[in-house]
Amino acid sequence: MWLQADAVQMRDTVRAQAWLPLTAAEVREVLTSPSRRITGSREQFTAVVAEALGDIADDLRTDRALRAQLWHRRRRNNDWVSYVPAEEREMSTWLARELERRLRDRAAVLREVEINPRLAETDGDIPDLLAVAHTTGAQALSVPGEVKCSWHRQVVTAIRDQLGLRYLQGPQGTTGVYVAVYFGGSAWDTGDSRRTQSARRSLDRLRQELRQHAADLAGHGITAHVCVLDAWLEADALSDQSPG
Image (cartoon, rainbow, N blue to C red; front, side, top):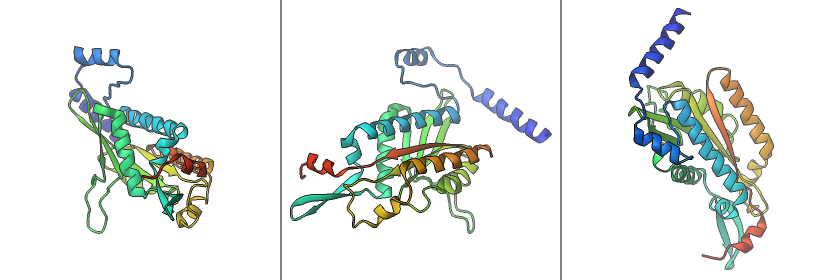
């Protein structure tokens, strides 16, 4: 118990030494812009990133043009006949750009940055996303994020095996974000094998299973914010897209 108490005291001491009061300009900026946040800890910054992801999820549900950015059209005999989802790496890159646009000057969102180096036979840890911001005390905060598409075999377990037990066990702290992108719909080319793999579970089931894993991680002191993006696309979207 004394070791735990000492660790808490050391943490509080470091935080107190790093803390700086807000400047008058920073206070005015927050008061005049409701979207601004003061982020003094990794937990607060993670909440900001999770909120931005929630906004993206809301927009995807209502904005079919935005949703179509996650798909590639297929042509046959000069006609657009079907869609296939973007590859997972493309999805991560799109999400990084979209997050950075919404966070604006509050943070940078990096792709595939090594946060823990390779050690002997253990591979280095390279999350799909790494959001980075600076606090008012000039301290850098970083939040790792993992992205999986619904056809991936580890779409449910990676929140635990990659994010929870690897990325959130080192210097990045114990708080991160996990994004699952659910693809489906009649516009999806039936010849794409990923369609069958994605259909193994419904959107609701995917969300439920991920929330359960997040709850299990929370029992071990790890906070994984879950965001499930609905990228469902129906065939009538084809008629709204002109060839380009």
